[in-house]
Amino acid sequence: MMIDLSDKVAIVTGGASGIGRGICLVLAEQGADLAVTDMNLAGAEAVAADVEATGRQSVAIQVDVTDRASVQAMVDRVLERFGKIDILVNDAGIIGVGEWWERERPSDADWSQVFAVNVRGVVIVSEAVSDHMIGRRSGKIVNIASIAARQGSPDLPHYSTSKAAVASWTQSNAAQLARYNINVNAICPGLLWTPMWRAIARKRSRFGATDSDVEGLSGRELFDQVIEETIPMGREQTPDDVGRLAAFLVSEDARNITGQAINVDGGRRMN
Image (cartoon, rainbow, N blue to C red; front, top):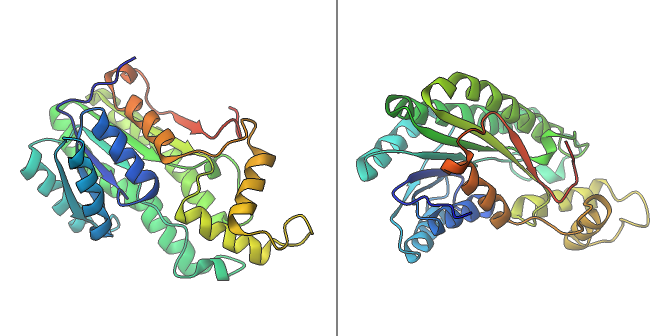
């Protein structure tokens, strides 16, 4: 199966690093032009340069997904540059405020800001972009949730809850937009060695080291141990893995798939 995204224009939020960067590169490989958006403009510019190195067009835009004016300015700029938006991938997300791993329990600020970015941010961007898609009666939206949406986390209750909300929003938004020929799906990535997981490892090594099997392990050693113990296929996931599924979901091959949340987790959660 060949995925052809030629002449498609995609927005990826949180595109400056990690999963977002991987998605940008895969979509570009399949022929899409990219708007790489992030709070980190320098990082977005670096990824946009990587996209252009593949022969595709790209623009880097700084955006605060929690601010409607910032989001609308981003959408307007993409439309000015490319004339349309075919694809939206909502990847922007956070796991806490400041050095959150130093706190045994998430603070009120952690809860508020994580929900502002991970949930409201997805809603705000989706609404702004879908207004354009509705007019064209065409579009593909992919929300990046998490395997944490499937199974509550004792380390990250605020993050798990926010990602469960993303999965629920995906179903609601899919029902809202189906009549306009707009597909909305979610991806639930498993365990990836990203900056986010490195911070999780720091917290677990500080607050979760209650037995000799965990105590003293480095972050990467702890990550590898979790992979071995919890993932049947015995290997970590990568941004490219997530990007490959995103490329399929935004292609015409997936035209009858909507309202789904699909795991990319090596079999950790089977449903």
